[in-house]
Image (cartoon, rainbow, N blue to C red; front, side, top):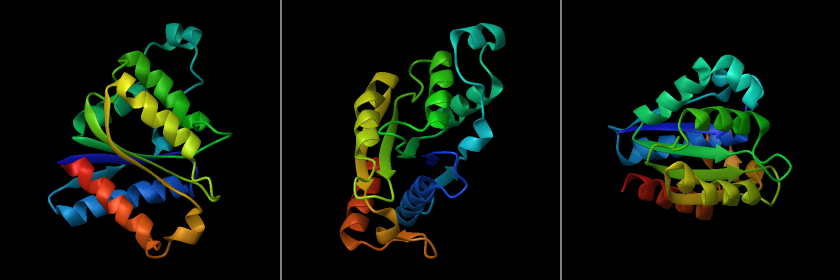
Length: 179
């Protein structure tokens, strides 16, 4: 089994990438034969989407590469950054370009959707939007989880959740992805 995991942010210090990586590591602890590839959205930089740009460029190679990475996987883990209550501009732009290749960009893959933020809200607004819309783009959401107050609940040095309740919830969510 191959899992593609990523934080939906381009920040070099992305807390969502850290959470996605941790969820991927939990999957390999459950089943050591699982391969996890952690993507970096900076590798898929694209011009701002518009129909005019699409007419000019067609489907850019970065969007095709991202679509292919999703297609080559058996499951997807995404942890969403919340910018002003919505997706980060980088993720939304990549999503827009990729969905023009094929609206069913998640390609019927099982998905674990996560979100975290430094604050108590835990990026629940963007997580709800992502969870609600994924089926329209052929994503099969197996579980979702918000992790509030990231810096209070995650040890960056150990790269793991310190909050026992949240950690158990994440382990159960990862297990449902693998079921």
